[in-house]
Image (cartoon, rainbow, N blue to C red; front, side, top):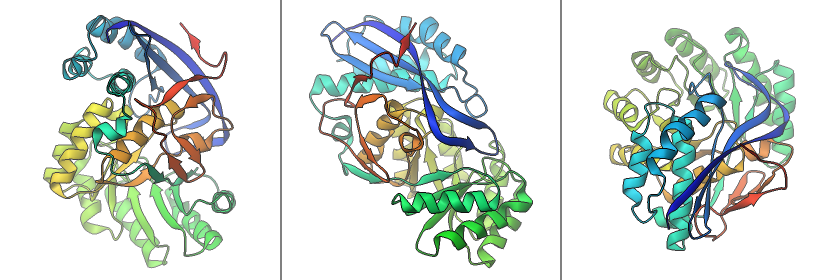
Length: 364
């Protein structure tokens, strides 16, 4: 199975309601689709959304990295030489983690098709079903409470609340949501780097003193401040999940060595794809540290790839793969089935994506 063509295209899918965090506001999932074609007729699909405020990757940089660097490096290679071809992707250009992730997942898709097995079975097959949380955007306390009630009515029992915009309101936001949904719903919070270390400790301990029962806090401080992250972990009553601080297996190793976080969030767009994600998961497993599998604002192509990784590894104990349930529609054919909080993988070879609804991907 030889690589003969690599195409890039664009896709846009409207969200149910605007997605608001401490870093950005979006009303639509805009992403880049990658199709790797082979001489056997098999096609592998990947995806890379532009998330400049987190990864630094834009539409132009993603397409440029693939067309100018990654595609020339692997064109004509055999999928059978899998370790060689995936290594070439990572070495083809520095940084550009989203572009690497898109190509890497498409290669895993092809490798699974070559072997006649779903990728999650190739990687360990710990399970084939997951339950995801759902994100509640940062807004006024009463609006977040209403959004939380709506999510619970849809069957979600774990909520991830965005906080950090006007920190003085964060305790009020959490109080409103907890009052609205009761004690039987798990609440996670994501500050998206918005707090200073001492401020984070004050806010988090204040939340717990009010009985808000927060399961974990995701990335409370700026990404590069690992000492600050460790300070929050050591002085807060809420377990700390590192997210934007991890862009590579080397980053994960440093956090593990420092004891800077209780858990690690693995995102394909940050680390460069399935291949580096597996390295992070392996290190976390050796260290006895649990992982979350997360996503950016992505269509089902990329989220589906993350589902395969999460289903393969028992060290992934928390799931934040809600991208497809935040959108108004799903134009992606095949792949994981998203039924509100329940995600189920079919036994299709590779990643299981078979294509798209007509005219939804605009190939360049």
